[in-house]
Image (cartoon, rainbow, N blue to C red; front, top):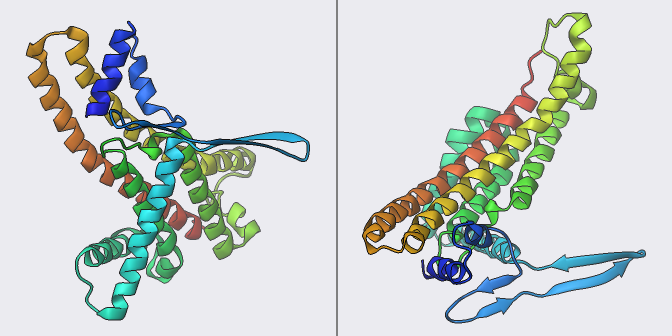
Length: 282
């Protein structure tokens, strides 16, 4: 919360409080980790030439939190797996992870893909769920950043789901059989070219919807919280403070629920699309 206040105050001091640029500044990626009033960390960038092309790579705050999320997810899952060596009934955090995995298996993967394919796709879908959830929750911590509010991150996750969907469909039905199965049975011959184009476009709209849904929902909550807190400094009256803070806290608590729901929706839809690719209509 103190980071929000400092951001708004800086914008007001520079006379830019009405443009909302301070909201964008907080949401977008940057090469700075801001821990005010404790300090600021400037992240490194690298320049090198490869086959005559100049390559510029930057480590940004979203990259840092992606790495942090990956480390947390890997550590939790490895810890849970090793806990079974000590006891068949895990305790504490391992028991919670086991409950979530069982829920994903019984309520998402098995109904949408089928019991036969649970072991094949549960590792991927489970990893996606825990990774997105961790990224979402890290963004709600003080000085945290929500990597899933970056369109590049959500696009990469959607691209992984896209490749998994195509792989699942082609493995089950064959390459030719998979694309042949895209056309609904009984379509008139003269409509086949149009339907084929429509179905091919549909293959890309599915991951696109996953990308935009996750990006938009994780960005919207931060925008609303910042806007509510910013009202205190923009209106410059103490009477608005209790209302703004109460609504901001409400939205913050709602964001905890949204973080879980968005991880669930992304995983559920990915599983559904994989099931549709495997069990095509003939």
